[in-house]
Length: 466
Ligand code: CS2
Image: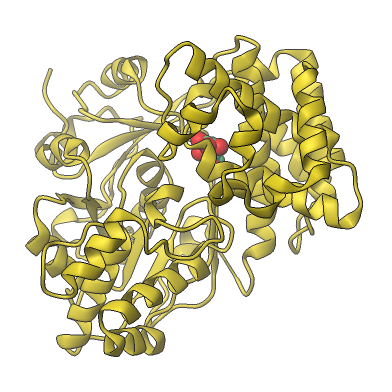
């Protein structure tokens, strides 16, 4: 089958949407770290829409730790297909990514960061890509951060994303270029502020002048991003080949719904992303909290409880009436009271929408995918809610159930000698048979892991089944 590429775009069937602008005029205004499925499904699609009216907002992707995306996309001139999953799947070829660089090309990455065209450096590097401690500060004991402090501004290529930011921003300063906007698009509460503090801390350790320049010239808006993006699989590849009549090495799929709320704090020009449905807000925190606690908190709950019950996908877990009722109650009675509704959002309607999105049978979202990196996700998704409930004197019995399900998930993996995907996997699996030892892991639980009220609730939840 002929491969998807700029030369074969014209062969696409009429019903497949494609870039309507002149891609040869596209310039890279964005350097994006972590051009994985979520970025390609969500932010790249928004820039793709913006490019219809402004050619300056193309994207250069940077994949620090893997070659796969570069290998798939570069031969296709950066093009790939996005499948919008609904009763009737729609297909759209996205052209916003010009090329993808890998960690093996440090000079090219530095040149992209220090290019006058670059006005946004964005990231979806997942929670663990930030190298933060349990308290949310840069972890100077992390091997990548230690290496970056040791190499300074001129030594080996940076090992961490934050290291790359400091190196790139220092190069911009030296070149006399203006500052940029650094835009985190990961599921961390206060993502922009955390990245700002981490970048400044690393810059301070490496070169205080650069730290001062960053403080003056760079902005780190908070952002909330939302769209359910199941990993690509062979079924998707076959469907896409059938629909577009061309071979796409790495198509992406997502639900039709997307939301992107960005704090209105930019260094220099703000891209007109409102043309692509993006909301700019003075304060993104209420949106973040609602999304992380209600949607992601419920997602992780469905994942750990659902896997324990033998379910495979979110839609299957939602089709289990007992589990669906439990999660709905958890959202309405235990999580919602800790969430202040963002302006214009009705929490009860928001919960209805999230539940309907989870139940969408057109989406095969594997619970095992959501179960990844629990040690990094649970603090934002469930533990903050537990802390708020405790300080407000609300019960935490139900909130302890998904935590207990995660502990059981770890214990099962340890007993069956199954690997888990989590940066703390060795430590978690070594402690998994003793739940109190897991709760004692300070980077995950902090003082909460020693709180007798929490320990009692988790113990009771472990004795129960949903
Ligand atoms: C999911 C998220 O994999 C996960 O942990 O909870 O990726 C979720 O689908 C997105 O945050 C939705 O915006």
